[in-house]
Image (tube, rainbow over all chains, first blue to last red; front, side, top):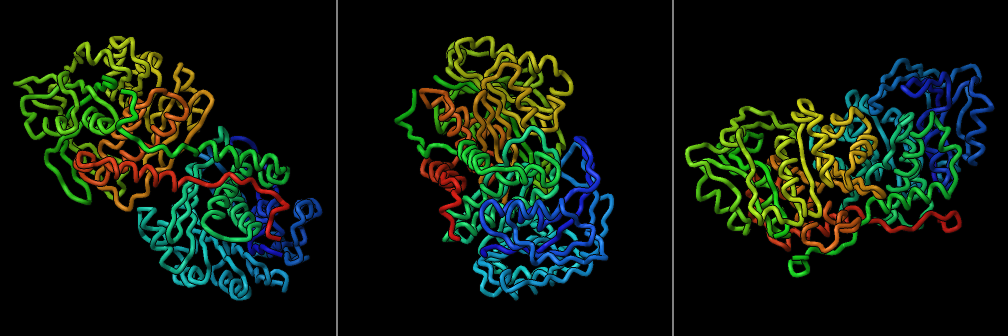
Amino acid sequence: MSLTVVGSVAFDALESPFGKRDKILGGAATHFSLSASFFTKVNAVGVVGGDFGDEEWAVFKRHAINTDDIEIVPDGKTFFWSGRYDYDMNTAHTLDTQLNVFETFNPKLSDNSKSSRLLFLANILPMLQKQVREQCMNAEFVAMDTMNFWISSMKDELIETIKVVDCIIINDAEARQLTDEPNIHKAAKKIMDFGLKAVVIKRGEYGATLFTKDNYFSTPAYPLESVFDPTGAGDTFAGGFMGYLASQKEIDDDTMRRAMVYGSVMASFNVEKFGTERVDALDYPEINQRFRDFKRMTHFDDIPFERASTAE
Amino acid sequence: MSLTVVGSVAFDALESPFGKRDKILGGAATHFSLSASFFTKVNAVGVVGGDFGDEEWAVFKRHAINTDDIEIVPDGKTFFWSGRYDYDMNTAHTLDTQLNVFETFNPKLSDNSKSSRLLFLANILPMLQKQVREQCMNAEFVAMDTMNFWISSMKDELIETIKVVDCIIINDAEARQLTDEPNIHKAAKKIMDFGLKAVVIKRGEYGATLFTKDNYFSTPAYPLESVFDPTGAGDTFAGGFMGYLASQKEIDDDTMRRAMVYGSVMASFNVEKFGTERVDALDYPEINQRFRDFKRMTHFDDIPFERASTAE
């Protein structure tokens, strides 16, 4: 098996100008593994309560995601998050967070999960991320996410974790906060200096940018006239990125560029409907059509300007 | 002659975290024509006072910009703008504006300027832009800029002007304000519906996006670790865009894409030093090197994902 993800599996309640959902499947590991499952086999590691029902498990099963390492606490309740989006869909306003069984989450990885070629540490306590990483010493490429809360409350522990992974996938505000550096290019460089091979900065409606030692790659976001529900877009991006990399023999500059585009493709679908609805129903022709759309959106012929060739 | 620009020629006073200048050459028509002059012959139309000195004229002369239509009011003073940038270099804080001779600016176009193949109407009173446009009825491609002040104070007149040009080049906040539409893709579509061939949205550090009837093209900004002085970046972009188009026989989707990149190239140089300093000193190898950098920053191989070809 080639890709393991450790993170939250949750129920979300959402309100936006486009509608309302009381209790739908959510969580970082859910969005990530669903997205990655189009490209590779995924092991999901997480925890749920006894309230996690057949309908929820069916989403994972439909995509052949290995859920053996999703622990079930029968008398516990699943992590619950409730949020609201206003017309500016960029910011989620948290209404309620009930950690429930996630509060004492202690990831237990089977040998199968431990032996994955790629590993993604979704946003959880930095020390837990580090413990998981150290259980997967044969992983060829390890990426992680984090959030503003850990950056402000335990930066030292977070940096110790960053030092043992290959890649971080965070948004621009988090990169600035982590480095106290307003310029995003300087911020990325400072983060690279923790010993990373790659830094991926997610920029919401402005796309995403990849920094590696010798290269720089930037992709716009897919032009969407309506964003229905941005919840999980970042994890869906990471799932497309890591899933595509897992499908490729080499993890190099060329495959990472395409992984950035597949990540953007998957994220663009995720926001078109509530929760996991859209990605759950995706097919390969749709995915590759949008991949080609990205090519058309960004392509130009490399014809340098020559004074002599002008129309004058 | 192939490209005429009508707009302000000014003195700027600037303060930023990187330094201070008391009185340097500025103005939309200045930045535009300097940038465009690398690609085509430019006629600049504007007005200056008797205080406009040899040093300022020398900048135009060095780049063979035709200044015959820059009117001199010997007993008047040149338009003066003073601004400050904080560490967030995205927003200019205006400290002082003295319109001086620009207050009664009434563009007088020679037959030479009127017969240009391309025309750029920099940010001036919308009715003046319309008058100038109507004097250049043979122009093949006419683009315009505007600003928040005209959008809020004379939207109807502004829209009448937009209806007689081919292309508008504005920033994202202006596009949203003009259409009361927070989504930038919907906003661009609404602006297209005024009868334009192209809408160019400048997005600062996030790059620029081109909307045409059938196509969409997006380019990132050049990754700069320090932005010294963003004054005139938008006009420098427009100068590169229009100048490159003027150098090409056809104005079509392919040349507009490259024009977007050359606009971004020129703007990226502009912000590296104060005022016109950097663009004034540019050479073609530098310009084309950065053009190739943009290709490398955005290029990926169009290899669609196939389940069968994966590493598993």
